[in-house]
Every structure is written in structure tokens, then in C-alpha cells.
Image (tube, rainbow, N blue to C red; front, top):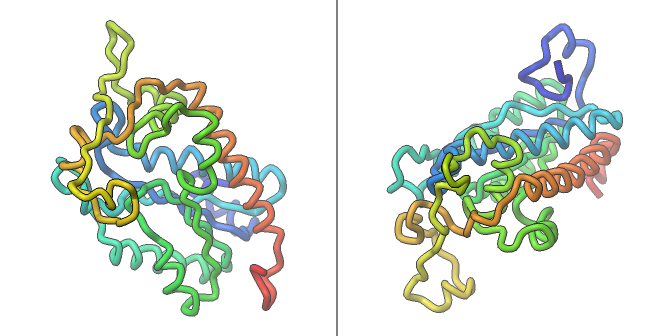
Length: 261
């Protein structure tokens, strides 16, 4: 039993060991090029969440990792078979209900650990700000918290099923990564993407919801072939360390009238 993982502990433990911080991993069910499993985002959130919560717990932080939500917003991948979509409003309702449950059980510090780029939870945090006594914190681990690490560790991290995600897969769920048994090469395309007809969109000046079936060949965006398990371990350990440091600070911080300032 790992006491920082809710799905593994029992009521006999929980009733005598209250928690101060809950971490909710958010994943997705979608294709990741031809070689990574549909549950890649969920598996990533579980791996990073487990490592971060373990490190924080062993430093005395009363933190618990909730079971991951394995579905995300997939409207831009609807043309790919078995991309399982939950609209943003639906996800908002699910998270709101879970927050209410946590508050009812005395936990008012909640971290959303998001692993899917199609999920956008900042508007939900704003919406819930005055509607719950809980304080919500959002960590998109593939964005700001790891931006410098991506540049240091990877040749080209990629956007979706590229070098970064493939490296994580090789490090932590390699049995689910499709590799040619004869050559040892990934069974994946190069993750090339097609530009739109608008220069401003291609430059990132204008944003759109991208149709992934027009953008990519097999849903991959970014070349995965330089990925190694060592890069994946180095990256995840560094990200988990940053998150765990925050969890320790969060657990120790008093929730006074000025919190979190």
C-alpha cells in the first residue's frame, strides 16, 4: 500500500490519517501516432503524479493522488477512430463535483495535474473562484513548468506523440510502445504537420482549433525517432521534483484570509 495513492489505500488508514492536498490527474483517450497507446496522456499523468506525490509525502506533506480521469476534450480529433470526447462543459461539471466531494471531506487545496493539451481548465478555475471554499491550482506539466527542461533534454520535444512523449513511454510503459521486433525501430511516421493557408496562423499570431486529421497523417505532431528511455526518465524525474516541491509548500501553507498570497 502506498499511502499517497487513494486507489491503493483503505478506509482503515484514511479515517485516522487526514490529508491536506489532493492531486487530480487529467488524461485523455486518443491516438498518439502509430506507436503510442491511446492512454498515453493518462499514463503520463499517473506516472508524474505518483512520483511527485511520493516525494512530497516522504517529506511530510499530507498529499493524496486521486484516480486519473482518462477522458478529455477531443473535438479536434473526432475524425480519428475511438478518440473519446468529453466537452469542456462536461469536464467542468465532473471536476466541480469532485471538488465538492473533497471540500466535504475537509480538503480545500486541490491541484489539477493536466496531461492533455486539449483540456483548458483556466476558465474553470476562474468560474469556481467564488463558488467554493477550495483553492484550485493548475499544472499543465507539458507547458511552463517543463519548458526549459524540454529544450535542455530533447532535440525537438514535439507537440503530440513526438520525442518527449515517446521518451516517456519508452521509460515508463515501454511494453505498450510499438517497436519493430526485427529492426528495433518505432512503428511510427515522422510526425510531419501540414501548414494552414494563413501565414498568421502558422506563425502563432492567430489561434484556431486545429483539425488533427488535416494537420497530421496519423495524429502525430513531432518526430519521435530520437526518443530514448534515458531522456524520458531524466525529464520526468525533473518535472516530478518541481511539482513535489510545490506540493510540500502547499501542504505547509496556512489557509488564512490572504491565502495564497
